[in-house]
Image (cartoon, rainbow, N blue to C red; front, side, top):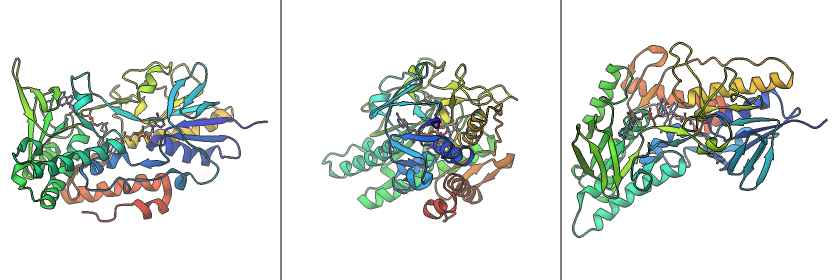
Length: 403
Ligand code: FAD
Ligand code: NAD
């Protein structure tokens, strides 16, 4: 009898963890475990703010997928171009794939909410290459300023749209990196402005007030400016237009605009034939797509409701990796003709970095700030490496300088 095909799309936190766990639960002797990813490397999405600011290199934040999956799992470096669950067919830039079980883990894209000019004029942190472009763009702007006979200081202004976790973590890195770039190119640091524009009345809306205050004061002390309660309504080549009141607007001229104001699922979901909202699929308790017994969704392409609040859990690497473990078990159950298990999320809390040596966090509901939080953040990063690639990956890629 031929072995069933289990196809996993995407080798991010969700997809790669699924493949690694399928190897343990189902085993490559019992099924063809096929992992498809557009690059032959996995990048740490949770480190992209560091790549974008230039505090770490793109190589530091990535590793070869084959080093982690080892032998047995079939890896295909292909870009998925279409998902058709009715025909049980996946199209890629290299051909077609069929499956008995499908796991979709194609991650997120930046959400621009239809705001004029953002797609054309703003940079984002949605993948490793986009983060690399942010670093290059900032450096180009700074170098170009040094060469200009007539200096336009707004070239040295960096606007970050959105003060959620991504925006705040990016600001922390930029606040550390900008003085280094200034020293490198002999630019007076006071000429540089880093401005965060947030639509909500506070940074990190919904997070603990005391921790939010710590983060805002810390970043302000490092020169970051905040424009709060002022949504970006347009981006142009010259900067961003913000709404300051009922009928009042302002314009911030900037050489760099980085959009970090929210995420949606991978747009391939929208044409997959599965019911979705902003390319995210509300999954069943066992993480299957509604109406499709052979399709599981992992990570940022999924929406899973918190049973206590009946609101979706935020899309994070933490939940993606836990979902992956349940999906690997459930595929094994299905192959054994057993009932599937419901997913139960164990929320360990969030830690938000403010650059290398400070952070805020609420692990297991306990507040922590400053250096201890920064050290904890590295422990969290190392734990993710451990869960995916074991001690070898931690030794290779781990963060050991705690602050
Ligand atoms: P991803 O990790 O984004 O992986 C998707 C994969 O699919 C990628 O490998 C991509 O190359 C591949 N792919 C995409 N399109 C295609 C295609 N067409 N064909 C083939 N392959 C494709 N969460 C936390 O829990 N803790 C944190 O500290 C944290 N920090 C973050 C910091 C930043 C700067 C950002 C942006 C996010 C952070 N998050 C954090 C959120 C977290 O990174 C995401 O929730 C997580 O990456 C989702 O995992 P995923 O597997 O769904 O997608
Ligand atoms: P988010 O949706 O959490 O935050 C986006 C922010 O942008 C919000 O504060 C929102 O009010 C603001 N915004 C929206 N429209 C705007 C506009 N027009 N102008 C100005 N501001 C606007 O998105 P995110 O920060 O990218 O986070 C995405 C997911 O990744 C979340 O689930 C988050 O928890 C997770 N994440 C976690 C960590 C961590 O745990 N350390 C780090 C980064 C991201």
